[in-house]
Length: 309
Ligand SMILES: Nc1ncnc2c1ncn2[C@@H]1O[C@H](COP(=O)(O)OP(=O)(O)OP(=O)(O)O)[C@@H](O)[C@H]1O
Image (cartoon, rainbow, N blue to C red; front, side, top):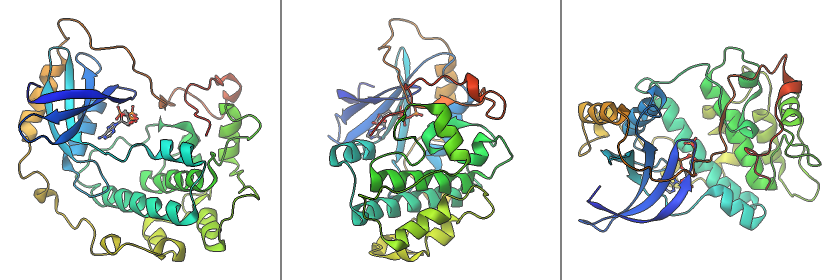
């Protein structure tokens, strides 16, 4: 890590803190995600790193390398200087339809690329991890589900949040009640408040995304052909223009798979010395333990993982 000068903390997630650093050789800025050495470095972390290494797309933060510190595994990646979309929505209240489309087009482009890369990515089907407000009904119902189709739902939640400045399936009078949110997701119970102006094309797209039956839900390729999506589409996001990269193109200069796997194995060994910090808070939770059919009444309605806009 001597190569990088730590500038400031930029955030924290389920696994650890993220810091802004400067490369002392090139002066380039990077983000570094620190994960405590030891048992936290499990197969999920390894899969995330290996998958991240395989991705190269303008709308996906680029992986650079992994390093070891005495106490942590450090994942060095491109720094996304624009800040969090969520923060922007919080300060703007909500976005205009044109602004929302601008971000939604980039989101769909990145998600579409990830789906196209599925054959080289290692996924864990049927795991129920994520931010509750964004989860599709079939994921909550624990049926077999196709992750690509469930992603469409989550993209729809993001679009709604940008347009309205609130989550689509939260009860406006009781937004932190997770149990109510789940029931609303399962019943596809959402509406667009009267004070928000949303075009018919956009309403149509949302109504095609928020469809409980995954087989009837609009697909990513269909979204890319929807009139609302196609309006003002930047040329670089047009079909055929975007990330036409082969997986072999991806890592010209970066660490080899073997090197990364070796560092991850080393990181599994428990750390020596003091820990960096204990501020590991995140808004994701593992939902695998919740039986949505039987135990709805038992679900904690804690607001820890629900941020009110
Ligand atoms: N490459 C990056 N550029 C800029 N900010 C980043 C970057 N990576 C992470 N961050 C910031 O640090 C926070 C924590 O990131 P991290 O990846 O640990 O968690 P997360 O993506 O929020 O969720 P999870 O805990 O599920 O991984 C992010 O929410 C973001 O604010």
